[in-house]
Length: 308
Image 1 (tube, rainbow, N blue to C red):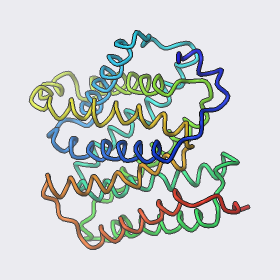
Image 2 (tube, rainbow, N blue to C red):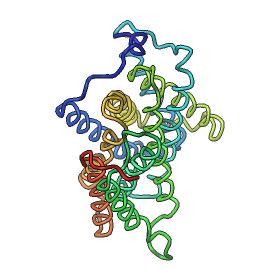
Image 3 (cartoon, rainbow, N blue to C red):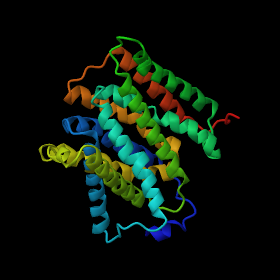
C-alpha cells in the first residue's frame, strides 16, 4: 500500500494477540540492547554518538525504501511530522541517553526509562477519550511512580552514591519518548514506515549539525574505531525497532504500545550483568520491580469503568 493510500484508510484492522506480543518482544529486546551498544561505543561525545546513531538508522531505512522502489523524499505534509519525531524520539533523547550513561550504570538507567509508559498513561488520560485511566490503571500509575521514588529519591540525599544529574537526565529521556508516543497518536495521514524514516533523517541531520557546532569535526575522528557497535546501534537497535513500533502504536494506541518500556529494562539489566559486569543492588531491584509492576498494571488492565 502506498503512502497516498494510507490517508484513505478509515482505521487499521484490530491487532491480534500474536501481533502485539511478537512486536513487543522484538522491540523491547532491540531497544534494550541499545544501552549496551552505547556503552560499547566508548567515550564518543554524546552529540557525535547521537549523530552516528541517527545517520546509520536513516541510511538503513532509506536503503529498505529504495529496494522497494519507494521514494525517500518527504511530501509537503510530512515535514512537520518528521521534524517533531526527529526531535522528541530522535536526537534529543539520544544525546541525553548517551550523556546519562556516562553518569549512571546501565541497568538503573534502563529502569528509570521504564517510567515512560506511566507518563504516556497520564497524558493519554487527559488527551484521548478512549485512553482514560480506569481505577486499576490509576493504581498502576501510583505504584509505578512509587518505584521511581525508590530508584531516584535517594539521589537528593548527601553521600547517596547516586548521580542526581544522571537520574534527572534519564527522567527527561522518558518524558521525551512519552511525548513522542502521544504525538504519533495524533498523526492521522501518515504511513508508519515513512514516519520512522523521517524521524531518523531529521534526528541524524540535527545531531550532526549540533555536533559540528558544539564539539567540531575532530570529535568524529574516533568513530572508525567504534564502527561495529555504532552500526549495530543505528541499524538493529534504532531503525528496525522504531519501524516496528510505529506500526504497533498506530494499531494498539500509545498506552498499550508503550508496554515495550515494561520489557526493555529487563533485557537491559540482563545484558548489563552478562556483558558489562554490572552488579544490581537491592534498592535497584526493588525500585525496578515496583516500577515494572506499575507499568504492567497500567498496560495489561482491562477496560474497566474510567475515572472521572
